[in-house]
Structure formats: C-alpha cells, structure tokens
Image 1 (cartoon, rainbow, N blue to C red):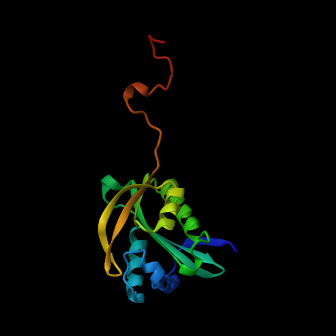
Image 2 (cartoon, rainbow, N blue to C red):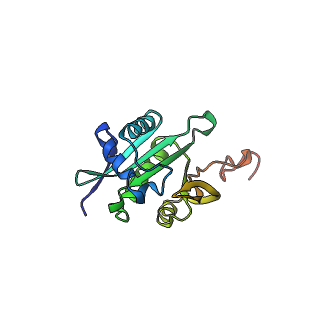
Length: 184
C-alpha cells in the first residue's frame, strides 16, 4: 500500500470529508445524521479548526479519513481533549484510523500538554474499541440508550487515555533518595 499522509485539513477537503461521512457504514457509527450537506460540514470543520485541530489522512491523493481534535476550553479542564474520527468505508482495516489516531495523540500529548484524551464509541463497534485500546484508551463506563441509531437506542462506551506524569505524591518525597541534612 502507498504511504498514508496525515496533514492539516484544508477547505478543499471538506466535500471529501462530507462524502466519507455520508456512507451508511460510517454515519451509523457516529452521531451524524444521514445525508449531510456541504454547508453543515463546512460549518462543522470550520468550528473544529477555530477551537481545535482538524486532520485528514490522504492516500494516493485521496482524502480517506478525518479526525477532529478539540481541547477543552474550560480553564479547569485544559488538560483534556476529545476527538471524533471517520474513515472511508472502503478503507476500513487498512491502518488509516491507526495513523490518524497516532498523529492526534502525538499532537495532544507532546505539543498541547494534554494529559487526558476522551471519546465515546458505540459498544458494538468492536473494531474501533480494539483500535482505541491498542493506543492505551480504557473503557471508563457505559451509557445505555445513549443515542438513536437506525430506529433503536444504542449503548455507548466512554473511553479515555491518561498520560501520567511523574510527580511526588507528597512533600516528603521531593528528595528522591537524597540524604537530608541531619539524617541518613
């Protein structure tokens, strides 16, 4: 397979993203509605770009995936980001989601100082859950009847990845084994 390129979303990519989202196998696993308009997707992508980061995966010049990373704006939750991702249905299982997710984690943790990345995923989307677990996400809970999907209510899993930073748990650990004056 040719190389997958991950890059910032450009305005020219929005219709390709909309077309990916319009596929029944894709929108069934998101909170998006069928028949998305170009106007709605333009607003959605512009909104993501205003408050976060919008990435696309490109394969042989074709946009085959999208990931929107949205850091929290609340000052007490600035260490947190959420994301949504879609991959062209004909490219599922080819590493597109893996590459998009790896790029988003790198951006969040190494450039934005995000220490918690959150997502929600339908409980029956085993392939997506396996991908997220591969990248260190853990299920933190479920919400039964979370959303209407194709006429039935579906359960959603809430997952998160935590990047733990080494820091002392209390003041008496600050010396990390050094001898304290007057003691050994």
